[in-house]
Length: 214
Image (cartoon, rainbow, N blue to C red; front, side, top):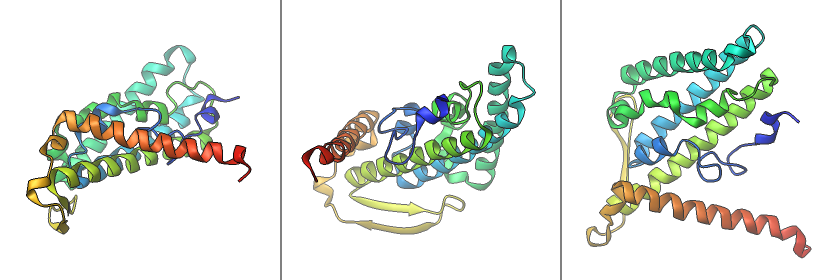
């Protein structure tokens, strides 16, 4: 069976961050706020789909001996284009993401989603699975960003990723009960561990349900 089919990724099944633990360096670094998490998730989604499309077109004309370096060059070019577009049109996100924008060239979500490690993959299936993997990554980033921002700041503030203007904000946790740790790297690991555990628990309950005759 094709390894792309075996991935069978998505929002809940084999989620890129919460189940497969791909692209964690970026995921943990940019989820200090909902705005940055959403912006980076969109960039990764676009880069993954564009890379899968470009690599799919070149696959038939690329010898197996040079397929890997060719694929990496294609991804590097697309990531650089996405970086320039982000800096031009989503300056607030680019400022917060910092060095993690150019580092997307090594992001395992893009590498796996673009089909870099698959020699013979169906063109349409590769794009579909890549989009599903990247969309799951985006949703996981948003969940992590919301979780960390709420606990650290007591609420949420969503800014327009393009202009930086406030779209909405609210606060419901008193300042005395806010946990600044969740703005720090340690808080990112704690958040990922808690959310992944809850995700696995919920997934386990769904798996066990048919055995109980429900």
